[in-house]
Length: 332
Image (cartoon, rainbow, N blue to C red; front, side, top):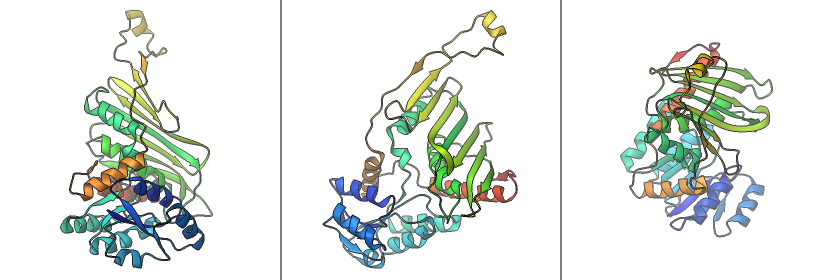
């Protein structure tokens, strides 16, 4: 499959590298407006044609699929142009900042029989796939709460706030792992005076079952943390993506049977059972994602439900509404 890539900034090089390594794909064209980045792309992928803008790439009849690695505000127009030209599309998250645009893109892809995937990279990590397995096998029991922290220093965006940039990852993981959808969203945040968007924000999702989800996102943290806690009725899981090897820890408290005296002291003394570190493949997530994109382009089902992208866009739109109304709970 001949692949074109639009954008060779922060994420583009990773996309180009993984498509180039896939045995069934070939990067034949890269469009990048900045000359210095085109020079870098030429050294990294010398066989690809380098263009100053995307028009020639989209109109090239030899390009069968396009990966869009550009700012969020450009996703809709570029993805639509590619689909209209009959090309499969992989676009960076989120799909769009407007629900009607996201719906139109998915509808257009379905009508034309084309693959349209959003690069939810974390869904393809061995850790998240393992948590999915644990939930599907009911090893954790009913999920009561999810607490996520995704914070770092920068990179500040000017076209979207921190929730659109960082919480998209967490929402993709949660919506992929948990079948039920929230009925309300609540968000508060602080606006950075220079970029004029929220650079710190807290997002809460309210579920009919009573499950509570809390997301902490920040571009203003002195440390980088990527951690999610899944609290089940049988076991709890900590997923720490910063950990080089032991990214998952499973805490078992269902096996611990307290004595009568320990029950009386339970208000001040908490105890867990054993802690287990499960094994899972450490294959690069982007390589797995590229393979899924290729298989989906061949007509196979994708790794995740593509309509999930609409839920994510709608949730972030409602979160913006909550931010603008002082943290009011907004119905979904």
